[in-house]
Length: 359
Image 1 (cartoon, rainbow, N blue to C red):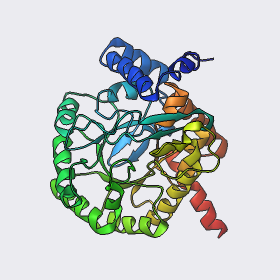
Image 2: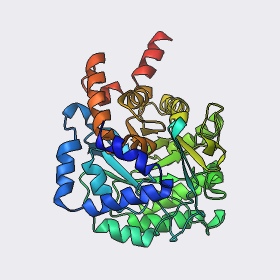
Image 3: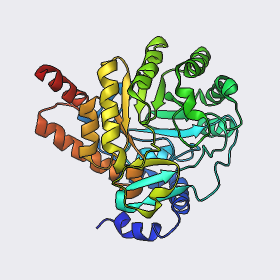
């Protein structure tokens, strides 16, 4: 039994957000100390077969931390030392926001899931931008940008652009988040004309590489509308997917009745199907990042084979602990060797290629 497996029952006795804050505080204190290097030696898996070249840079491995875990860009370096190949911070909004009232984060342990209705709580783009400007991260850093709650739909393009301009110098890539279910009216911005205005403003401001994050609750025609905008503005990637407001009948935990976005194992298959749907349409023209229910190497491998160039996790980190990236990367190497792939990049879209050849 690992140290985290022994500690997790104690953490899970605390309210979910309290436990997250405690872990976050420990990681924050580690940052910049010799312990950070010790963690790197323990958890980093260095193997050229895991390297992925995309978005104009090299990712040391395809396993990243999803937005939401480090909303304020306080611990990206420590997360990198845990063996992650990239870190996405945020969502960052133009305004400093307290978010929704507590409680707003719930564990569903029987389902290996979380429900959150955080509401883009963050320090605001000015503070986060200043903090990131003082931060050195050894892996690619993504910055997720959301809409301030106070901004009207008409003001959304200027709101997103303001945030981007405050963090522009620190990001390796930037993500337009119009898919969180926890800010009123946000997901309506996925509609083509609203999204087009937001993306146009960000491109005009110089946002590059620029990705858009999709909701799993979009219909397939709506996803295709978004992909038309990806093509029109020559966007660099798509993240599939955000959390869902759907509640599968399989859920058993008492907190399944809570409102907010569901993440974790219950959305794994759905998210992987969405990765495949997107990958089939973009056909390697843009980067696809798969997120949703990634706990193990097998989970990550399914998304890679479905067409994801990279994968991300958040809920898996909560349940599996600090060794999750190392375990996934070691497992990926074994799966690649089993199936005769020389690299993770070579496995990307393997199931699409097989389906095409069988068709």
